Length: 283
Image (cartoon, rainbow, N blue to C red; front, top):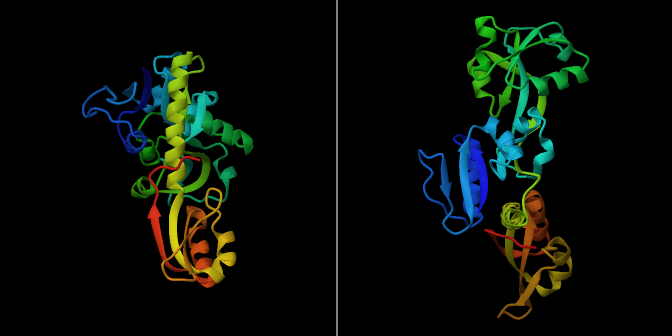
């Protein structure tokens, strides 16, 4: 059995559990528990504080983990990264009170800044040639200016609503983060095999999320113009229709290029375009 550590609550926890389910892994309800087991894969899930996950994985208490890059880099354990997962994206940002004057990061020279990420903040300030007094606190960082603890804050931001509600405005991005899969560097052969199985499933899910399955009808005379627009995995599937002179083309389109390609397909003569989400895609 391989042991996976994830955040015990919050958006990262929800996104992590969603990915595990999409990988075809079922598990008992995790409500009010510190651990649970999968019913159809040799996997045990531990629910931990996000700050503890990198250390637990490095020490072998957990074999693998899903954690934010911000936490991993703050702890200096980025070498544990196996795969970027692309969800739970956020940023570590500097913010000041709405009424405070701010030109650029040099405006913070000699100021006090409250944060839960002193290492990332110090690295950023050093790179900008700025010296500031860093106050390390855990939780409720955003209230520091209003109670006179600090002149500015450096905190995790998703939508920015928390900063706004506390009378702050975001002024600098210090670090961009997303969820990553991490692994202990001394896994035995059997646990490494299970990790590779998980990675295979995760990649199939991620490829599907970035792609759409497209079915369309077109006159045979338009196929030479349409084929280059639908590379698919190798090339589009072409099936003759009952109506002579027409064919149905099936292919996969990258999400980022979707609307541009659809427009070009229509201009080339495609009709009856059907777009279907893909659950899994294995290259």
